[in-house]
Image (cartoon, rainbow, N blue to C red; front, side):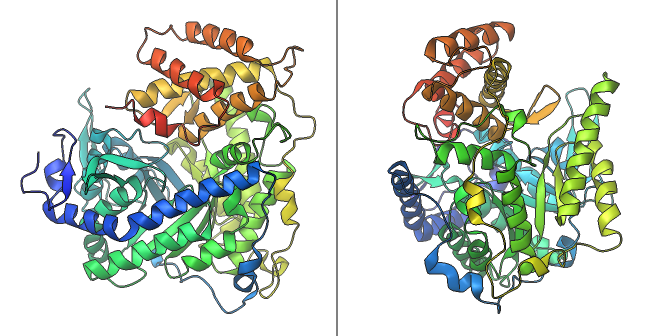
Length: 535
């Protein structure tokens, strides 16, 4: 499938797809092999460390600030590297899959930045991951164009937002490229190809390689990324700090190591982001024993409940005392072209959320749809004005040389006063999970469901809540427990309402959801068993 021969020890098993000749060049594959040889053993050790840590928590251990790294937290002498000019003002960032139409529309949307995603909102088919890399090469060079099946043409405008890229997490493989017979890490595949093909061109255009890093659980995982960046910069002859990475704090483990994560990446850091949906999933996954707090319906776990407030407050204070951007969470609403009342109610909620973030000290926020860019920009303009960020906000609450103020134990108070688990909430989780898994298995990782842009993170919440409610026998508002029989009955009814198992890949989606919900052992990530079902 390649124009040239693959390097020794490298095998590309994927079929011929568009863009492969430009992306999977022999030199690029040799660079991937070098990354694999140097870092794969450490990656595996860190994944084993995750499993060991979970076993400790299952045995009664808990989370807390690390005594061994107190010196990092108390040391007033370090700050992260200064942001480059085109990554200083990040008041509104739009996110979406690394697909041509999305890339063009997002970069043209008026948002300051766009994050092209290879993780939660991209189904990692071979065609998608190779095509996404090819599209980014075009976007970096200003030549990307797309024509829809209906004949509508899309092109980049004269002024576009700053491009960031999110590679897959450390736990995900790319099975279509083998190095010495082993699948390469999806993280190294995504980062390696983007960096190899675009780092020099980005520098030539006065920019850098800007990334988002997902699913980190410890500062040691951040250290691995930092080592990868330094090695890659040296290998391609570009200056240190060419790479700038924003870490999504979307695991409860990482919430206790925010400062250490910034420290490990201090020469490559672009700040932290409050990845709210995966964070909730992580809370359920981590504390999953029979005595764990049972979270209520997803809609009731808002950003104003105490343990989520503790999480976002700690993130802002930690970032600003080290000169780093604190980025807010996602507004996933998709405006309706048909229902003005739905739009009005949803836009009020989006505005309230962005007002909260901006007043809490966040430097910017995320949206999923171009129509939300003006609203979010207006809110942050009202706080930032002509300033690019508000990194001085609230730093007096966490002076250097002291621990970040606030009780870290508040992060562990995983309860919602007055929260309830309802049958309607069960049905919504089942329906969303079925629809999303069906979409993902068909190659679309960003699915519009009920006027929301759903991705793997929200599917993870849906299935983890169902698992938690079933394994604990949680009573619903109807007075009946969610046992296996009740789950199966609701699943059958929701599946029928969607058209039944014969429509698309809904039958496979239902089987996969059953496997995730009805197992006694929690499946770490739904994308791992689902990946085995992709073409």
